[in-house]
Amino acid sequence: MNRILIVEDDIALSNGIVLALKDDNCAFVQAYDIVGAKKRMKSNSFDLMILDINLPDGKGLDLLADVRKNSALPVIVLTANDLETDIVTGFELGADDYITKPFSLMVLRARVGVQLRKGRQQLSDTIHIDGFSFSFEKMEFWKDGQLIDLSKTEQKLLKVLILNRGNTVSRADLVDRIWTDGAEYVDENALSVTIKRLRDKLEDIPSAPQYIKTVYGIGYTWTVK
Image (cartoon, rainbow, N blue to C red):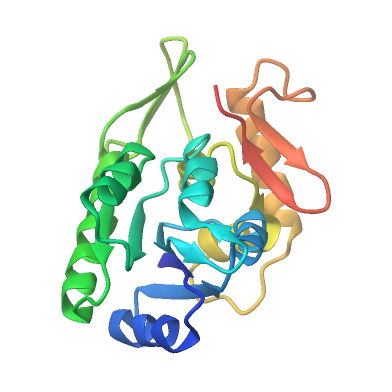
């Protein structure tokens, strides 16, 4: 399931975007200002952000710059600012696409599809972090040249943490993303057990992890290295 964060202060437009993009494989979270967007990003992980530039409490480009400090989250900028300099600035700050208002919802839908496919393609490549090499497509995971055997559940957990490295993913979000077999109830202890097993396999000192860190009261994060 793709999770899309829409940061747009025009409630009617935000709702229209949700209707235009509505799909069984997408879930939407709406924020109407920068504060709300940051709050939602602290407690959820996302596959794409649709970001308005002109927001009630600041500039969307400032939020984009903050996101780019530690995340490769795809961002599509929506704005009425259609000057060439504005567009160039958006791309320089890390926007993946830039759409000026007014725009076609069909075109937006197509461009969203492109960014989601790019995100999936990035995971098909091997990710190198310090002594780690992770290939989610081949399901091969290496540490210092040694192949590591990960269960399917451990792979799912690692994938979510790596996709959101540098950001905290809440326990509830992790449970929802990893145990997607339709079970009505998942013992939250299952997540703690899986975290421990993953640390045992990846960390030099599992009791003092360098990579998979606990953010107390919220969830877990893969620190940026």
